[in-house]
Length: 87
Image (cartoon, helix red, strand yellow):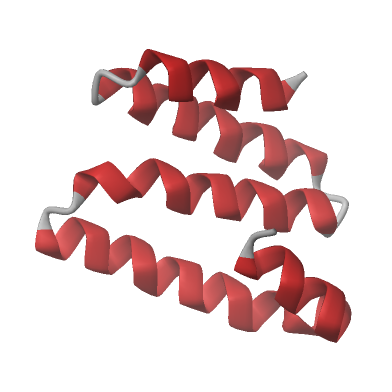
């Protein structure tokens, strides 16, 4: 179970701004430190937050970005998992 899911379930939709801020911070740190291998995971977390919030358009967009990044980094199996989540 992801931290996003746990926090959202514990605190409800009121936690969304805090979770979004934490994920933005994580994404900035990934880019700043060059830890690009973690970037797709941040997008998966963002997709989960959108799904839990009922934002299907954002959910799909974040999954597509995770899929693209997994392919870019040469992780086709992980990319396929992200693609399957879109279905």
